[in-house]
Each structure stands twice: as structure tokens, then as C-alpha cells.
Image (cartoon, rainbow, N blue to C red; front, side):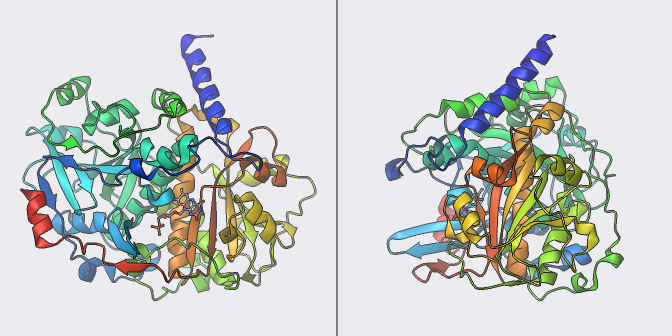
Length: 568
Ligand SMILES: Cc1cc2nc3c(=O)[nH]c(=O)nc-3n(C[C@H](O)[C@H](O)[C@H](O)COP(=O)(O)O)c2cc1C
């Protein structure tokens, strides 16, 4: 066996070991500190102190945000010119703050993108050429949601952006995402790596929706590894628990300007990486906590996925059904605007146990979650879909309560039939559009079961339905290598983001559930070994408002004085 194969196998073993070691079980939870040490709580805002701050505009709602949310899918807007206004809207509708919450003496910021524990491990960076009204020079910058601003870290030399972006259409730019594991491990210990990857997936979904509002799309750049991504974003020197780990690079391109069969590439030579390392990057990363707890398994898994030469998968197939054949109930835009849905999105802390969802809304949601039927949304994930959804239907009018399976690619049904319990029914519910591949596995009341497997959280029982995302695991790892492991969580997070948005559009709420008993779900379904593994849970329903918490505007903290101090 060659050394390359030995290394590949070693990394596969590592991620499987990590996955098993970080399962929550009914008898014991994955290792963590077991309490919250408030004195070391990480700062959710990374600032590059000393880097010039270029403020973006928050006044974008009138121009962009009033579009009906459903129009993004029914009649997507034409591509906008890249300028200060459109760039501002792009970040405002993807990764910006969306509110402050106040309860007693506590005050915390919430964002457009959700995050487990609201800890926000994901950081975003921009690589762009000159942008009208914003920058005359090409640059690499960090997005700072606290100020809704870009911190300019490096001016590129003339010609470098053109060289780098040579393979991208005119009007494109690049976003790089990194993850600070410490922010999640502070609370969740060893399971943190999974949550960081979910959050990357949510961020991907957020960027895709904001791009679509501007007539752009997100396409993954897959030929660079984590350390090359880190060099490109100027974080390669960071070390220790507060390090930003390179996750992914995304080309933001005008819609339909790149064939779906072609993955975008950046033209960067070894020489270019070498010069970047030796440049003067502006700004020092702020310290997030005075003290840290180390979880060595996070570096152990991160090395396994970072160093592996991941083989890109097939491009997503184009939508196989034209908009005109959408069922008529899905052809009408609901009244909620993009702003209301995207910036108004909130996780439900409690569900009312009463509200039911109309069957039409349920099927519309599943339709949008199907990568073949809604390819535009999922085009940032450049590999075939690996996650199916097990639905615990509690209250969907016209759909009998029970355990359902929603397959999200054409071959999942056959693969899962070999693996799931032989006694399951596999019947198509009456009234379900046949394109959806939804089948009833077992009729009955699954509220208690859903609560139990979601770490006894009532939100999983008291919604209209709950979801367990089941990923093809050992086969995918074997075929694609260890690098697919985080991508399974990205896929789950990205789909989860759409569940959040669809819930809001339907006047309901959702919540991501990272705390679930992995093997209890596998036992329920009859899954043995590692053929399929549960990678995320979700719930959707009517939320109970927490009246003790008061809301403030997202940027109410940015007084002229704060802005003046930050920019001097
Ligand atoms: C990956 C992930 C896992 C989560 N897990 C849970 C969970 O197990 N239970 C829960 O009540 N909320 C969970 N949440 C919801 C977060 O607590 C919530 O997103 C965060 O507090 C920010 O609030 P927001 O979503 O309203 O912005 C999760 C969110 C994400 C993104």
C-alpha cells in the first residue's frame, strides 16, 4: 500500500474516531467542561486592531429588502452592479447583526446567521478588486459585523487581483470563511468541531440568499486546502485556541455567468502564496479570552480534514423541473419581505405544542429543500447531496402524524431501504407531489420519541414537525476522503438555514438542534455501523415569545462617537 493510501486511511480513521467520541448518548454526553465559566467566555467579535475600518451602509432596506421573499425563488432579481451599496446589502442580509436583546443586566447581539449557543465561531473575509464608491484598490479585508464594516488588512499590488480572479466573470468577488473552534469549545468541549461546521453551513445558506437578492450566486472554490486558504486570508500566523481555521472560499458571481459544470478557480501560484506570507498585514487580532481550556481532539480532527487532498464531487445537476410546473399553490408569493424573513429570523426557545402547518406549506418547504428542485440555492455545495431527512410529523394538517423519510437525491431511497428497519411501510402520503420522494415509514405519535432523541428538548416535540438529518457516512468518507466530513455538516447547516427562512415566511419559527443522542436515532431507524449517521436536528412550529427579553435595533450601539473612535 502506498504512503498516500496509508495517510488517507489514517485520516479516515481519525474523523470516524472523532465522530464516535463526540456522540451524545442517553447515558453520557460528549466531553465538555460541564459548566459555563463566564470569566473565560470568548468575545463573539473579532476585530483586527489597527486595520483601517471601511464602513458599509445600513441604509439598504428601502432599495433591496422590500422584495417579497418568495420572489427570490419564483422570479430571482437580475444581477446588480457591484458597488458600495450592493456590497453593503450583501453583508447586511447575510452576516450582519440583526438585533440586540436585553434581559435584566444582560445584553447580547444576535445576527442574521444563527449559531449554536449564539457563540459565532465563523469569521468572514473579502478578497476583491476595486469596488465603485467603496475602494479604488484591490484588497483583502475582514468583515466586522459589530461595525458592519470591512477591516482592510492588505492592499493587493496592481495586477494581482486580475491575475487571481482571471477565471471569474466580471463583477465577481471572493468570500473566505474561517472558524474559531474555541468560541464553541468554551461551552461544548469536544463536540465543538461539529457545531463550527454547522455554522459554516448556515453562513453558506445566508450568503446564498443575500447573493440571490442581488442577482448573484455563491460558487465554491475547491482547489485550495485549509492552509492555503489561511495564507490567502492573512491568518496563517495565528496559533493556539483562538486561531481562525480556514474553512472555505466562495466566489460570488453574477447569476448564470458560470456553467454549473465548471468549478471556479483562483489563479494563485506558489510564488504568490510566498509573497503574501511576507507582506505587512494590517491589524492584530484581538484577544477573545484571557484563559482557555484545551481540547486536543479538535486539532486531531482538524489536521485530518485540512491536509487531505479532497477530490471534488460531481457538480449539482441543473433543476430538472422548470418553474412553470411548480404546483399551483407554490407559484404565489407570500406577503413577507426579504427583510422581514431574513433579518427577522429568530430561533424559537419554546414551541406552543398547538400550531399546525398547512400541507401546502409543508410541501413547499420540502420542495425548496430538494437540491434538484432548488439548485440555485444549493449551488455553493459543489458535491452531490449526501443528506436525507427523517421527519417526525406531529401537526401538519392533512398529513397523518408519523415518522417519514424525505430523500433529497434520486438514489438515497434505494440505499436507505437496504439499511433501515424491514418493518417500515414506505408508502407515499396522499396529496404529496411525486417529485418529493417523501414516504411514510411508520404512522403514529412520535412526539415523545422526538423529544427523547433530541436530548429531551421539548422544542422537538412541541413543533409542527422535527427533523433528523441523516448523512451517508462511511461510503462518502471512503469515496471522497476525510475532507467530506465537515462538508456533511455544511450541507446540513445550509439546509437548516432554509428551514429557518421558510418557517419565518410561513409565519412560524424554527430552531436548529445540535444536541441529540446520535445512536438513539440510529437505533430508532435500524441503522447499524456507520453506513448513515445523524448530523443535525431541527424543529419548526409556533413559537412562544419570551416576554422577559426586550429587543433593540441591530446598530443602535453605533453612535457617532463610537463610529468616530473606531475609525481613528
Ligand atoms: C448548529 C446549531 C445548533 C443549535 N442547537 C440548539 C439546541 O440544541 N437547542 C436549542 O434550544 N437551540 C439550539 N440552537 C439555536 C441557537 O441557540 C441560536 O441560533 C442562537 O441562540 C442564536 O439565536 P438566533 O438563532 O435567534 O439568532 C442551535 C443553533 C445552531 C446554528
